[in-house]
Length: 393
Length: 241
Image 1 (cartoon, rainbow over the protein chains, first blue to last red):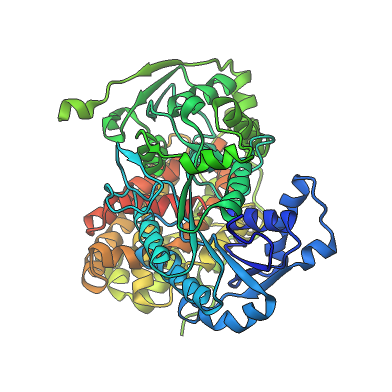
Image 2 (cartoon, rainbow over the protein chains, first blue to last red):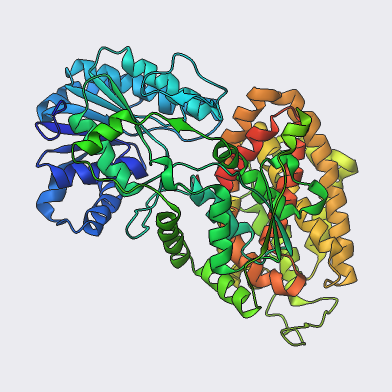
């Protein structure tokens, strides 16, 4: 074991968020360590521990007072004052920092600067002040920007155009970590989706959930007879939240200092966006025709109702990311797997579990689906339109 | 000093309204139909707050189109709307929450929250109401006038925004900071709007949002913000991200 993983207290940022809460639940389940969770208002100890306890219970782990007492919730100062936490962190015995907090805004430069760069810099200053044994930084698999090359498990010396400012700030934060002098591991997950076993998902509607949620909200009164959809034919790399949790922990516990790991599924069975649409519409019924376009620019404006156009717009960036064939190097993850890490790769079958859970948790969608079925909804005819960007050169 | 709760001034009519005749499939329309009056009571709350904010902090918008907004609010105030019916409807809680986030405290907030976001939301509603044959002629005429008044304001707001707030990335940053809250409060109106107005007028939240987003994106790009970024902000704010 290169990292500590339980020998000493663990500081985990982002405990009030989705992935940070998963990491905290894993830390409480796998160790006897004190888990320190710095959060900002309006979060409270109760609001932070609620989802963590839920995740522990879902895993069949005991949620006792003794377990929860090991979680210490402390106020998170502004970035420039985070190092002032050092005396208290030393008193608590913090040795490792798992930095899972971040800003997921796509383009809000101020929030991205503060949430991804300033916060990371502040935590690195704290890491130096407490002589941290390990600093694990949660980045993103898309920090390389758009590229058709194999994306290495290394810091990005070269990078493509960024899908959003989020990916750029994550890449820049990786460099802050690497240059800090604090021993580090960087973990880059792809698109996190619900648990592979029961589909539960504790996050906000990002990734595929943005598509599903937007559909629920804006198409939930009825499909147009012909639905125009932007959906690429490249495999989309999802990683289940249970795979994220186990993989993140294994990276923390076992990888060597300076390692970068892509926490991604193997390509073999990954679905494309078209697969996902066909799964949804074949399961629930849909409009009479569905027209697949690879790019938003190819969708004929005049044929699309305003609310469908909005739905296409709202999901455009994610569709754009999903239209590209991302090739992630996986040697480190494969090595962890060879060492005993068991991960369920995402496939159409496992995404279906997440989809079923999403529908089961939505009364509005269930009512819509029932109404649509009563009206005789069937699997639509699928029409694939050519990629017009090739014509445009 | 800002008067407290300007948008909550009761309508001219008190007491319960009479039931609307007709069946569930084809409701009959009446010139003073209770559901139509509920729509106008709702719009009056938004419009009163907007005018109040314009008068207090952005007088050019209050005066735009020869005082079109003042005249429009006066017309809404003269309708026999029933504030009690609105307060008792499922529309009330999300409306209260939304308007609480829209009490803009400075000119920049007024320009962006009222002059840009909520005016375009109103325009989407007015356009749909004007175009539906299931509303009375009186309501369609009202919607037409409301739309005209709002357009006068948005034209003035665009000019003033360019002068006072700027354009491009600076404007985008200010726009996102000021409008995230009010956009995030819209979603709670979805089910109440569909329940109250969907079957009755065919005025559904998703339709309103579709029109609203299209308008707002066009208005934002005309002000120099990047379309892609505006859409990302709207998607995030409207979906609770």
